[in-house]
Each structure stands twice: as structure tokens, then as C-alpha cells.
Length: 62
Ligand code: SF4
Image 1 (cartoon, rainbow, N blue to C red):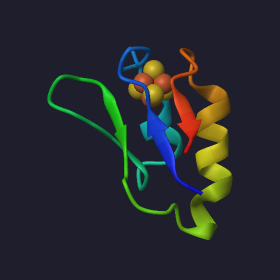
Image 2: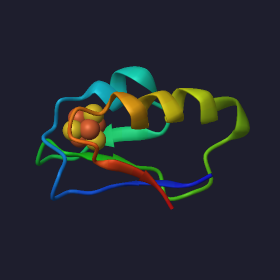
Image 3: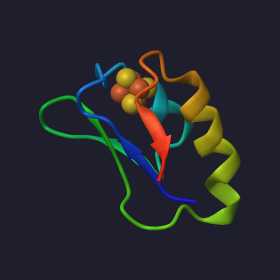
Image 4: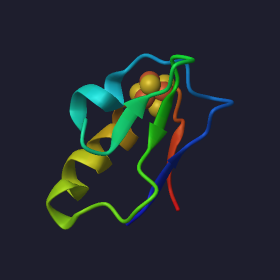
């Protein structure tokens, strides 16, 4: 799977980083970005949890 963060929706709460810091990071502007590459299989569960827990529903699967 691959994921992306909609920067129009993200409000920088940081929930995704807490749940899966290997996939998500914060930019200098305080918004989240996801790794461009394929999410490793062992991180898919945590990534799905981040998708479901994002308060702004800003994370989608590509
Ligand atoms: S949890 Fe959602 S709103 Fe919060 S930083 Fe991550 S993508 Fe942005």
C-alpha cells in the first residue's frame, strides 16, 4: 500500500506520527507528510490505524 496526506485537510495534530512514525513525519510548516514509497508490510496495520484515527480524515490510500 501507499498513502498520502491531503495538506488541505491536515491540521497538524500529530496523531499519525504517534501511531506510525516510520511512515509519517511533520514538515517545517507543522503538517504531516507520508513516505513516498510503498509502506512495508509490517507497518500496514499501524498505517491503517493512523488513517482511521486522523481527526481530519486527511490520510488516504493511493
Ligand atoms: S493525524 Fe491527520 S490531521 Fe493530524 S497530523 Fe496526521 S494527517 Fe494531519
